[in-house]
Length: 359
Image 1: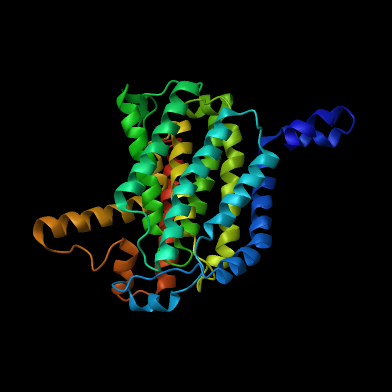
Image 2: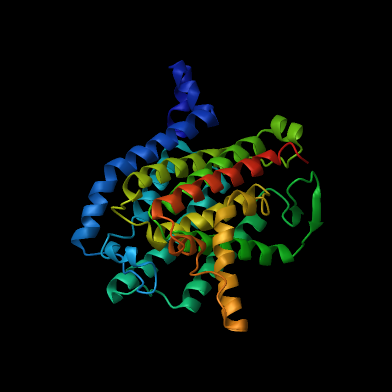
């Protein structure tokens, strides 16, 4: 909005020239979401508390979590609202990529909202049935993949491997299956990780920071040519989107840090996980995102491994899955698990950025 309305006035007031720069708008998008979360947070938390929208805690989990029962959930609403407002203010609204990201964020968020609402009304940790939730995620992911394929400016199908300069294989029509699997997988991986105070929010900060850097580099023909990565026309605008998400996650973490005043809920985790995959698909970093979000991958893998091991051999690999609960039951304090996972998330982000020169 500012770009469309204020930048044309540069002929009358030259300082408006700053609105053409992606870096300027990205920084202020982050500041906008951060301030919006600070301002909206207390009001949203109080409204959730008055409506008795509290989190139901599993009885089979760490017993220390039982005290968290009734803590307001669906706090992801403040993240989504702040991102949407910041994007409408600071982004180039003529960009198809921006609207695709906004639409995907809202669609995955709607699934999470319904799931959270049902959990609250049922007063249990069960929301949407597994197949309904999974089917809705597939439908949203397929719609995003089709939009990207038919309306995006780039050719989709070639798959780029981390540490390699050229695409390794052209997936052709199989790319649709891969794209849907990535979006649904990332969405659920973040959802599984959101089990400790501040854990998912802190890890998402690392992921969106990294994606923001990659968006900026991919959107610059000179930088992308120098680094040997695909040049994506208009990808620079996604830098603003990613930094808006960073600011929103930092603002949410203010209230979600231990002891949490509010939980993200599925409305936040499903939407942010889904949008991570959408951005990575646009940037042609479909496989690199598995390194960037390495902790999310480990969390999801721990659940899959636990289920397979129990069904096949009637034995558990971990004391409890997802992985963060295993360490809690091993004697680690909740805050120690969270901080150590944050450190691991930062390490994965650095490894991912190192691939820009090691290829």
